[in-house]
Image (cartoon, rainbow, N blue to C red):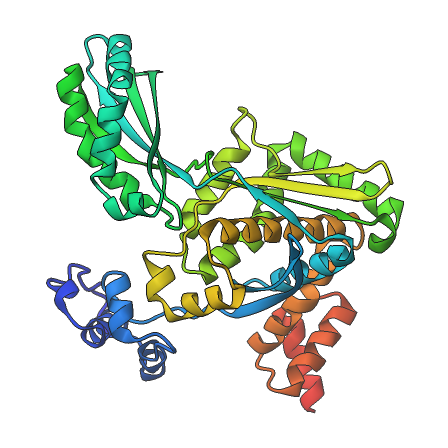
Length: 424
């Protein structure tokens, strides 16, 4: 076998079919026949669709799709499709929802469906004068923006407001224009980006400055989804458990090292629903973490309090830029199925449900941390994965997993030993 590394400059690779790209990839990486056959199987996605959704397709990555149960949101029952590879996420949401189901479940609201497009103007000879010149043309800007997307305007959306500020930077003052756009049932990236691109040369003409960036902001703080719920103290294990959850939240609120993991747990639930519905997980995650640091200190996305009756009240407020039209939400058959399962008719309703899922996920994580520790429940589910990694099949999987949990050692080497004992 040659030790020479083949060149990664695969000329014309993007022009090939998925099958031809797979063959070149197999040659480059020396993939065996079984691995090639696995990649060739694209599951329930049409290869031609996959080849249109992204570039240089050779296969698909199937993620388990589960259903969280017992979710009551604003008095309406939902079952929640969640796409994730991580054990315990779906179970955590289901358990949290069940424990507050008889106490109204989750109550939600939304600040609106507005997205922000930013236009960066530099080299303005009079930045403060330029700011006012732009603001004076608000109605002209409205017309320019709305002409970009007459369908959105017909649906009741379009240009909503204008904000302009002078931003002091290392390179000098910049005039930053925010276009506030109501994108209705679309996530809105394409719509607001088009408006920003259209407006850019006009800003240069009006101010004498130079425009560089013109793109949406994923800090969608004018598109906030909110959810709250109350868990009766008796239903969650008593005052000691309630107080432990409060202490865990206070830790996250004060310490960014803890808050990073605290919020990651929230996003376990949120990202799973965002992905299942064909929305942009990276955009939602970026917005959430930026919002958590909006006061100059990275903290918790949730708040936890004790009610006057002594019960546990939780709430969340989070940017939620999701849509029902455009992109994979309409093209991907699994995303369409998940939206049908959710039975949502508007992007606002979807965002509110997702916020409730994030709060449920956080409750379960905090409760586990405050009682048995996060590992017990998580590792009991993860043990099945370890058993399969060791080669367990069929009923062997549950038997080996149970032994690993009983031993308190969820490791592949222990699983191999237990599987050998079982088979002998």
